[in-house]
Length: 362
Image 1 (cartoon, rainbow, N blue to C red):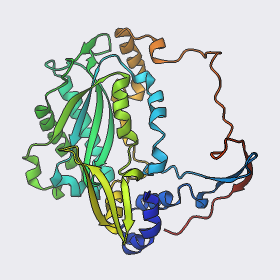
Image 2 (image 1 turned 180 degrees about the horizontal axis):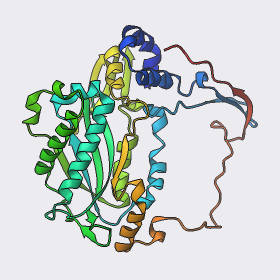
Image 3 (image 1 turned 60 degrees about the vertical axis):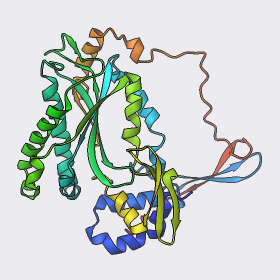
Image 4 (image 1 turned 90 degrees about the vertical axis):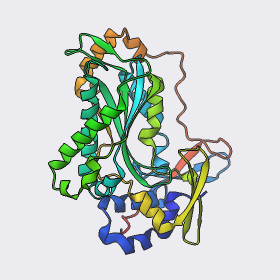
């Protein structure tokens, strides 16, 4: 199987030589980290099996948030950490998409424009939800930024997971939404466009936006996604998915990469073959700015409002035993953390620690 790391190791130097003067530090950092992930360059440990005497190498992970090998195992832990946010109400996925005419401007000014995307979309949804025709109160929401299509093209959008309902004023009353409906998306798109425009006007970038984009219809979508834990399981892959997983990369031959993707309209699997240079370019445009927060919480789901969330939980009749684990079961056997040989199951003994190599030049 071809891995993203192999593509970076084989063609990364050539790409950096050609484009290094135009590459962002975050792109250089991601290429280096992913290329070195779980290799001797990052150090690790050498073990020997006490039964079959086979040696096994265990190298450190890069832990870069864009690395396909480092993101696969985090969704379940994240779900465990979200128990306090679960509510027994319908949940909705609301998606706000940046129009095509603005995507070049967004790609060239990611930190500023991603912040505007978050701020304007969250404000629009909260404003419309306050309308008595819909919720009539303050809602809570969790948003995650995505920037890609399935064939790695640039398509910035934000998904919000929204519990179906809100609170009146100080949280003394719960105001439920309809079972299968949150808000109308057409007026929501109009408010989103207006708020995005107002935010962009505060920056030097506003004159660079094509005037016609403020006259066209913007795209917002809303769909029901279940209740409580079911809805969070629906969202988890959106949070930890990277632009492409290694199992979708099929071939690296003669300077070209072939990868598989599922066509959105038909659900059919298709293949795309591009040059290694184009593949790297497509991947890197989805590398987020350093320290940029891609998951954000608003309303009664915001960290500062967790007391209000507790009050809402009581209004809904949810007890702490339903959302938290209380105590430990003495009959449950503790997991065995002993490292075992993948060949024979024998115990692995640490025989050497491999120190990381010095950082490679970009």
